[in-house]
Image (cartoon, rainbow, N blue to C red; front, side):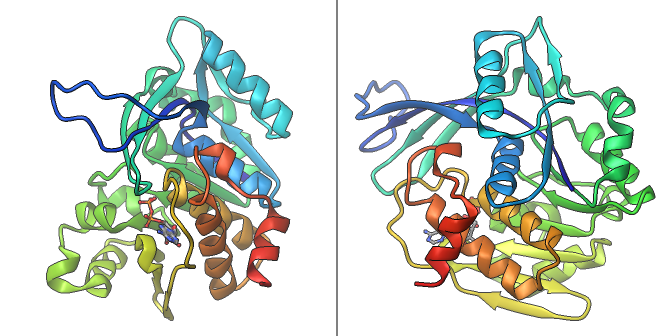
Length: 301
Ligand code: ADP
């Protein structure tokens, strides 16, 4: 079983020709609302991609929170141990997507910031019994740090996606089995610049900080993986990018699903790359996350 602890947001998405300058008002092309948030996207990805998933998040008692719960229920994603804090607004993200599929995002965390370390007491057994715990940084730092330590103590494998980018202390990283980072996140965490020292040297700094394995995602250039025994580079699949929102999240959820099934690193990374490539061909975070059979069909083409 995979337990995913993290954020849930309602995404308000508008397509624009180009992003507005300060003080400028522009006219959007298309509007949609969809569920997002890194935690929820990764949980939905692992769930749709065939894993047994429990998602733990915090929502407000508002309409957005209620709609989110209804959506997760309809999708069959288990959110039964999530926290509801009535007096705060659920998380939102205001997203602009330009003609190239690039995005510009404002997140208002709301209830996501209420997932305090004390809540871990209520879900301790769930973490203990999980095979894999997946975390991101849209939940309070101390909660994520303590959850990693709790997982480690109970032989639950930890996958940490340090998104959004931030520095993390070594005592925290020591409890991480698999670190998943994009280029910005890797640079923030390591203090090294890929442009200057190369991707492998940056990954080596992260391995020296105590994580067991690193997956560095490189957007349309694919990904690079390294642990103490092996290393591999994989290209991305060629697709027309419509909206890159949730590419990294789909990658993380897919990777967790494949590792939970006991697949090899190579096959897991290929599967995750395919799932995220499909994701970027569609608008929205969760609406664009594929199901397992879609990914298998894509891979057999
Ligand atoms: P994030 O979304 O977290 O910034 P990346 O941009 O590195 O992460 O993307 C994660 C993964 O998604 C990549 O490793 C790649 O497999 C896939 N991906 C991202 N952008 C593209 C693209 N333009 N074409 C094909 N695959 C992509």
